[in-house]
Amino acid sequence: MTTKAPTFTQPLQSVVALEGSAATFEAHISGFPVPEVSWYRDGQVLSAATLPGVQISFSDGRAKLVIPTVTEANSGRYTVQATNGSGQATSTAELLVTAGTAPPNFAQRLQSMTARQGSQVRLDVRVTGIPTPVVKFYRDGVEIQSSPDFQILQEGDLYSLIIAEAYPEDSGTYSVNATNNVGRATSTAELLIQGEEEAVPAKKTKTIVSTAQISQTRQARIEKKTEAHFDARSLTSVEMVIEGATAQQLPHKAPPRMPPRPTSKSPTPPIIAAKAQMARQQSPSPVRQSPSPVRHVRAPTPSPVR
Image (tube, rainbow, N blue to C red; front, top):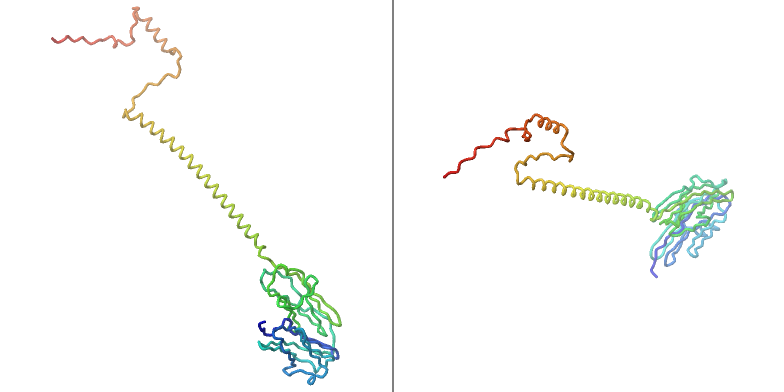
């Protein structure tokens, strides 16, 4: 098995304790080979000799320091250090010893939020109280344990839950419970992680627009083809008429004037018939004469040349 430098899966959390009560520091450490653990207060090594009654243990990755009865003199910065052949890691928190008490109170509550799949999510709260409240995070009523995927951090009165890489199944109702021997407080919020498939509606909208555009384009093409078809037929008809007219005009540069054809086969109009009757009555001879004498003039017959 390869070696691994020490890391804190759960770092130390600061503690506010009443004078005369117990104060406990605890951290979770991983690494291979198993690290060696040391404790310090304000830079000085802690042991049973330097701090009478102190209890120090390290088992199954849990490093714990317990002061059974604290005094104001025990206030300060406490550090745990883990070391093995591959490296070193430290975590630090504060101990505040006070004579007063106060129930837990959220100076900053959880905020509902929405995040995208694969992003990092951080849920923060600020909790005050004397003695220092025990703060726990829950999702849908189930307590969240600190791990590489769900890290619980504390910096003073700021408590944070960090989801390294969020997925849709991490969505739900998140709550924080803060408890001490004086009271309890809870803050709740909703977390929604949007998966990649939830971006589909935007793609559908684009697809619908594209389909409409394609339909319009096809309709325009059909209309153009139809217009072109009718234009071609009209042009052919015009060309045939022009070619027929040209064929009739080729023998005559100036077409002869043709008398109009009678529109009906009815008898001679009454006016023309009356004029003809009057001419017959004025003529003494029964021989029918032409209204115009010019038609009775004949040219002399030429004598044959001998």
